[in-house]
Length: 92
Image (tube, rainbow, N blue to C red; front, side):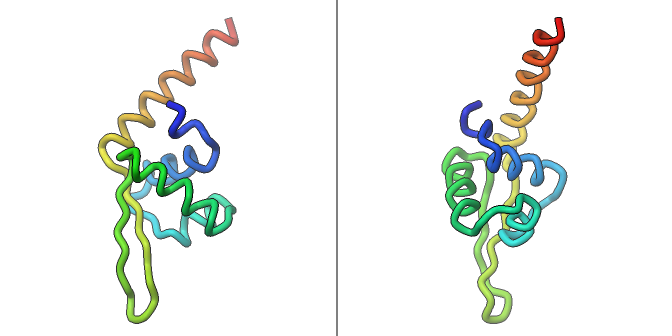
């Protein structure tokens, strides 16, 4: 899946697969990336239907949270199956 094969996108999907939701800042810290880089990749995943985004304010501070969608979970599972097959063939 070319949409999630890129390192940052795969990191976003993987992190969300083991967490109910993560904030923009949580993802940025986990992936050690910049605001702009994370924003671009998260938007592509959102446009692809792999994650959902909710924006709100906590007091006066804007906050963005992300969740993995069912389509995103299916895409990750299929990606892992595909990569396991590539690894299996490489070892043979």
